[in-house]
Length: 284
Image (cartoon, rainbow, N blue to C red; front, side):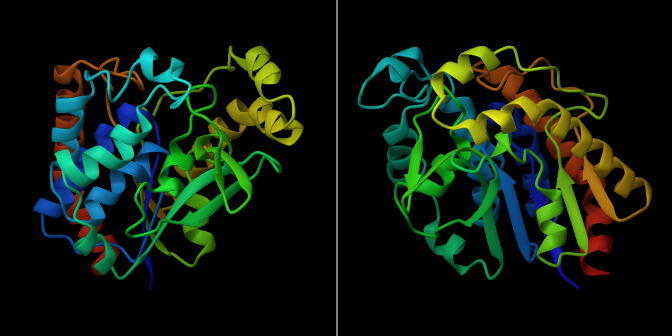
């Protein structure tokens, strides 16, 4: 038997899944054998694997409103070219301001992967997350929202946000052999993604990557179909899905600490309610 945890992305909305994971830690649940996440799902998710309960809550409520973390100034800076301050986010915070426990993360005996989208192929790839790399380029690539981040180069390949190709990588968990899977979503169960209004701008910006553009044109349909298939598996008892009842209007670049705290709390109580089910699914 192999246990798996899947974390959807959603930038700052991912504070919901942080609350879920914090509840798991406080309940004393052992960590799963395999963890995979997309974008902020895995970027924040590594704090769960380093067993740093409530670290992400402190991070977002302290720094979401800090222009060094998110601002147009960062995006317009030719040395940064991202809405998120890359050095501040991926180096200064984890090594100085809110230290990440690299030792505990390195000691995690399971496998941890981040979903990225290969611009040349338009396909999702699942890269193992380095345990001590600073800055962590795999996490940067997984979070690299089109037009809000620069293209991230890793081993000669060009990558952007994993959510472009696989926002909820539950199938990956089954493909690597997991048979006891928990999936944490960051959108309500009734949510349906609408067509992307930025497609024309994407076509101009990434015209050198036709396969990636094809993926972006299919993104809405694929995302909704992925959710439908996931809920069908849940109905069959093959997966446990945890989703917010309400996201309180939280945007992916939310800066209001009260909204972020409320969504974390919703995740925390959802995690507490589901802890017994997770225990039975993973470790019975």
